[in-house]
Amino acid sequence: MLFVTNRFPKQSIRSRKGRKFNFDLRNNAPSNSVFFCEMGDDEDHTEIGSAEFLLRLKQSEYRQVLLFVHGFNNLPEDVFRMAGELQELCDQKKKKESLVVPIIWPCDNDLGIVDDYWDDQKSADQSGYSFARVLEKFLEWRNSDANEPDVAPCLKRINMLAHSMGNRVLRQTLVEWDRYDLASGVPLLFRNTFLVAADVVNETLQEGNSGELISHASRNVVVYYASDDLALRASKAANLRNKVASRRLGHTGPEDMKKTPRNVFQVDCDDINTAYDMPTGHNYFRYAKQDGNPGVVFEHIFQCVENGRVFPDDPDQRSIILT
Image (tube, rainbow, N blue to C red; front, side, top):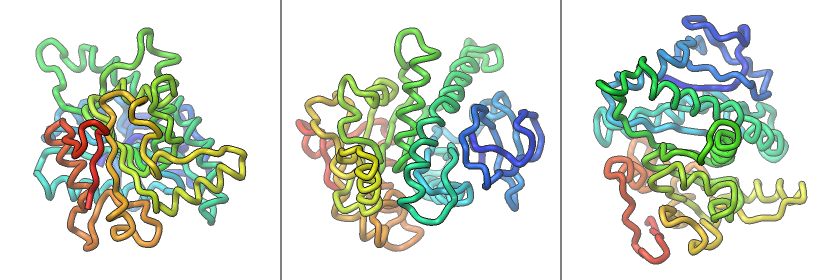
């Protein structure tokens, strides 16, 4: 499995192709550097560098790429497990269709969800600077001789799945990329962007707000939400403690669909989220009640990946109810 990270390694922060890469779990500060790596056994990973990383994606037998940005309070071993489950489900649905690539940002490894939350939120914001460099490296590579854009361009479609506070990482990445590297707004980069249990304010996608860039960078933006997501209730409590009062996108869906761009869709997961993930109802986007079987949320995600389109039950509200 290939992955990108801005977590510090135990080794030097200086990148070097082919070196061993081990996560320093005691250091959960976001690095300004980003590392392009291949997962290994027993936490011994290998740094392969951006050029080799992008070339492997291009040469992969998979037709599409699914980037996965994890949520808060997840260590690398948790992320690899979730990404591995997503890859198994993708392969189960259709072989060689979608290659899962996790993006690993630094979370707190102390005990206690609420205590970790505020530190992780700061880390998510600061990680935007690092991962904006990843997108810029991709644009440079796409137009470089190494990609052979005139004779053998990379035709793989890119999809993005952000879970929980990973949505904050994605939003801030596009903000910083637009601010420092782009002259005329973010390009259309993602075929689908899936915002699952998003731990950001529910107005964020509205025109004029920072999350609007997500819709600019995506053909489709699909928001999955559930009002009884207990992890997001803890998030709301933590934000209230720090004088931030707002409902979360992953709780209610967009605040006002009329104020969101037309490529944003909302999916109500109230009927299944706690059945799939007891007791919090937060990690409901992979398996169903029985491990090994895809849940209806994953089924919907994969349908969008495969078809590149979203078919709402209510076209006016661009809404779907999953049961």
